Length: 463
Ligand code: UDP
Image (cartoon, rainbow, N blue to C red; front, side, top):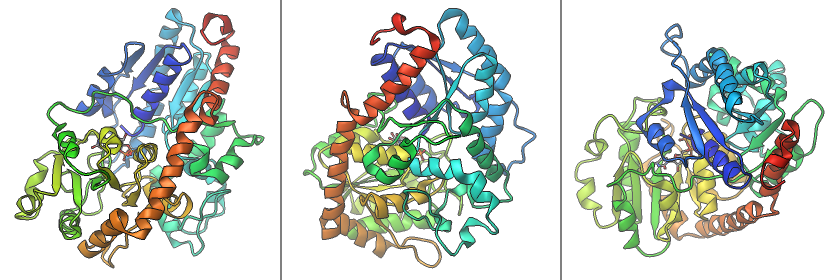
């Protein structure tokens, strides 16, 4: 969902503002109920096409998500080529846009006579890392986590090796090799569209916006966040009614993204920590996972069991006047947009980060997997919109620490500092998306490239 949502927003934008039609192709293996509901809620000008299932049964059961998605993309190349050939019989197809794990499908577009762009749903820092990974890897003599010095990417906050992208944490794992491969393949794109904006990572933006031989032009076109989808399920909106009754800026939203889960022990600490803080909260509760597996719900946000049964005894009763619990999935953008929401315990997934920035809500960073840990470093030390949590020696964040940081965010001086910084970024993000703003202009350049390349300038509105 974290990749599909911004891609769909991008499709909506090029349809509504630039007069194109769009077709979104998805993997059969990721077709969760949440995803299907989301796809069927898209406007009729956006078609969807579920690619045929491919077998991944030869992969070991332990194969990482990144490996599975990458292998699936390669095996789907012939199907994508024939889907594109089909589309070409009905439309003037101006371009093909692939997700960050789908760079191999550039070959499918090439076979169908099309040029490809990369849609990078996360930030410039992660793009910079992947573009440079082949070179970084060639000079690396140990694991990232063993590095004494932090990784210094041009224009980015230094990232301690332990916080680098999770698929890069074990160099012997297949998914590490795939990431290097993707980093190389990205250079074949005609352009790279990134869901970020200059002010949140200004130095990286300056460097990546500058043309560089051998690297495609980079266009920060964000923040594109979820708008008006009906993925929010009926009957789950009680939480919005509850927010209506709370004072302005008084509620802490607690959520770990579309796939993040906590261990039972950690879930207990969150519950007791929230209770100790005495602050109002809205918590999206998921059934706990086994230790170390933070992404066990990645393809299906629905908890397999009733998550509330895992809460500490008496917790719901004791916190009923200050807390609202939601099972598995909340209408997040509506929650963040609500005037009662004053803080967010956030897993630092990039979409959630952009959503919180767009609505001016400061965060407590609680990264779990993917690029979330390096995002947390950037958001606290670079952008200055996040407070960090200290883990205990056993890796668990204790209840006292949770309560302390929650109080700091909602009532303390530190909270004020990050709140005022996020308000600045909110303003800058809105400016960039306006007509003539940096993000709008970046998108207009890509659109002009497509129109020019296809010779269909006159067939489309806006030139
Ligand atoms: N989301 C939501 N409700 C939830 C959890 C997540 O609407 O209860 C949406 C959220 O608004 C965001 C996306 O799912 O658009 C999560 O993407 P992100 O990149 O933040 O994290 P990921 O799910 O990829 O870990």
